[in-house]
Image 1 (cartoon, rainbow, N blue to C red):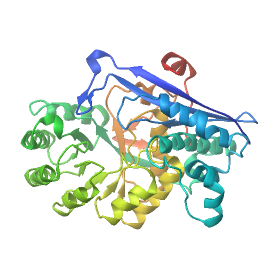
Image 2 (tube, one colour):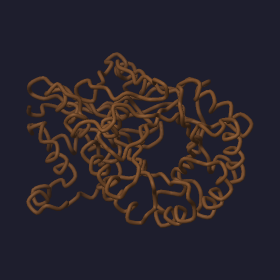
Image 3 (cartoon, one colour):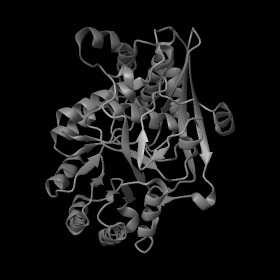
Image 4 (cartoon, rainbow, N blue to C red):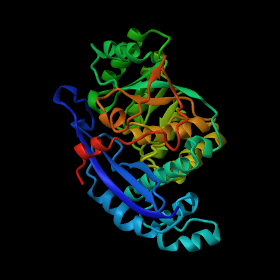
Amino acid sequence: MKIKSISATWLKVPVPKEKVSVSDFGPSVSFDTMLVRIETDDGLVGHGEAKSSVGAMGVYHALKAIIEQELAPDLIGQDARDIARLWEVMYNGRRAGHALRRGRVFPMLGRRGLHISAISGIDMALWDIAGRALGVPVWRLLGGRCHERLPAYASGGWADEHTIGEQLLGYVKQGGFGAVKMRVGALDGDIMTSVRRVRAARKALGEQIDVMVDAHGTCSVAEAKRFCREAAESRLAWFEEPVSADNRAGMAEVRAATDIPIAAGESEFTRFDFLDLAERRAVDIFQPDLAICGGITECMRIAALAAAWQLGLAPHIWGGALMFAAGMQIAAVSPAAFILEYSLAHNPLLHELAHEGFPLVEGHVAVPDRPGLGVTIDDEFVRKYRVL
């Protein structure tokens, strides 16, 4: 099972004008991702997903170069089953030998950002190969399931104060969700507009549906604390990324000022970032993105940190079918996992990139038992939307 080839394909799927959503990131006019394909010398193929941005859109020239020109040459000819060692090779670069001998990391300069995203996609594909080689799902290789199915929350919520209730109720009826997430923060213009939208959402949904809010890191510490005070009566399930991911001390200050659970992590890289969040007592819920944080190998370490610090785990799986499937593998095996994100934006990468879907049954998603990541790439879809 020697690695024969590693390729990266940028997929760009336009969003029809009538289905474009608008947030503080601007209008989402396309869904973009990097599809990583690894083939072994005995014909096995695995796929992974890497992203150059947390949101829907991105420019992927640099990420492709890192995967194919920097990381792939060090992996060609290596045993695809040695996933843990190959992760260290990619993370530590030319000093991987020293790192492995001495039992601590000697990371390359790019230990954050696109290098870790590139590692994520390759690592995901290697786990896919490992599962396919043995005819078992990845969760079996990771220790078996704690959860056979998990509740999902509908992720969307861009409407204004007058229509947010109707929009979120539509989500609930569409998938039988018991929880929904809406956006707040900079796009609202001021904190009280966000508060009024949240109050309108709670009034429309009643007391039985959980409501989460996501500020995309756009509030100041003072604004986030005020939002928490004003929105306390709305009984929020969590407040996601209240302040910038660069302001961990500020996030800890927000958390100390409220009993609304604080969630974050979609903008973080590797276990070291998540350890810092835990040690600062900045969050209640980890949200690692499998296409950004370091892949399945690293996310298992992050999940272990969540369990050790008695924190919740809710993977950020806003993207394509592969990262969604990878997030499910982690959530299935982690006792800290308790819910899955389910994008209700127009997203063919989630629903059309793979032949298999992720059906909702009474607001829950069952963890599949198909080999590897459990998805089969639609080659025609790839040909239609490939950029390079």
